[in-house]
Length: 160
Ligand SMILES: [Zn+2]
Ligand SMILES: [Zn+2]
Image 1 (cartoon, rainbow, N blue to C red):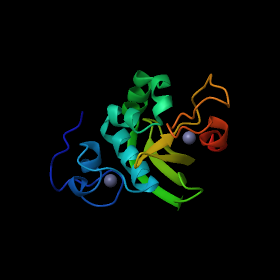
Image 2: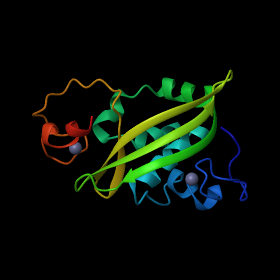
Image 3: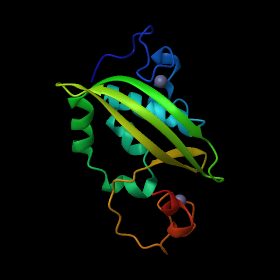
Image 4: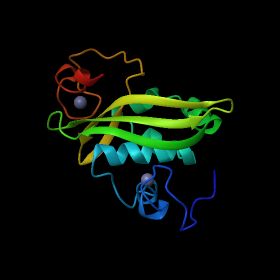
């Protein structure tokens, strides 16, 4: 892990000093108030290799399917250069939001841009990332992965 408690250190997400930006979220002294803030803190977590944070901020029912070693390798292999948030739609419905972003990184050979529209779900006053890449063996009638108690079909399935 890289040294990170230098007070002047810029936050990888680009919103000022790390101590005032994503650090309180990574240290669990604070929670993300918006999906955009969570998305930014997840980008910073990739840059600083806070793998636990990336896992804990994925939808509750998806965490068990995450490949920790793969996430760690992906975060370490790349040099994370810059984050551009393109748009934030905070209320797709009561509990879902969209954040479109471009993550700029260097993969050791060339600069790359990862452009993504991510969906987030609010559960128990915490925002979580809905990971569209995970295979899920659940049926549409099962309780949703976000913990809402609704059927998956009527909740997060619409955004995956
Ligand atoms: Zn930040
Ligand atoms: Zn849901």
